[in-house]
Each structure stands twice: as structure tokens, then as C-alpha cells.
Length: 118
Image 1 (cartoon, rainbow, N blue to C red):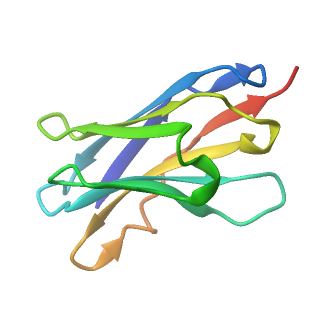
Image 2: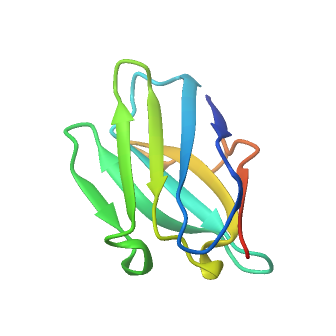
């Protein structure tokens, strides 16, 4: 089992920035990637950014060029730098980890709320 704790959310104005962090603990030895999901109000949870153990990144189209994912392998932490945020970025953000069996969708943390509003 993997324990995930997200932090860093809050209220931000459109065009502003926010940095999210997530710490993973527990069965972390088998992780081959980390990622951020988000769930807007009334919508499903979707993957928005991933980073592999060797640093390769991938982004969902709507956040490309605005969000940057990074990680500290030694500390099993992952971050999401959110720049030029938009109202439609409002969501609960969750981190997750991937192993050889896939994303650990039974091990969600509490998430962190990001609200973009003027």
C-alpha cells in the first residue's frame, strides 16, 4: 500500500501561480512514475501530468506550457508548478504513483483543493 499526502492548494486569481506538493510513503520501492490527477466539480478524475523515474514528463493538452511536474526521487515527492492558471483549472488535485501493475487507484490521498477565481 502507498500513502499519499498532497498539499499546497488554495485560492488563486486567474493568471496567478500555485505550487502543489505530494509525499509518498509505504510501498514506494516499486514506483516507476508519479503523476497528478484532478477532479473538477461534478466531473470525473483525469490524469494531467506524469513524470517517470528517469525524468520523462507528459502533460494533458490543456495544461501544456503552463504546468510543470517535477520530483525528488530520494524523497519520493512530486510537485506541480501551476502558472497562468485559468478558472477551468479549479479542481481537487490528487497525486498518484504507478508501478508495474499500473496507477495505484486504491491508494488516493485526501487531495488538495485549487480554486481559481477573481
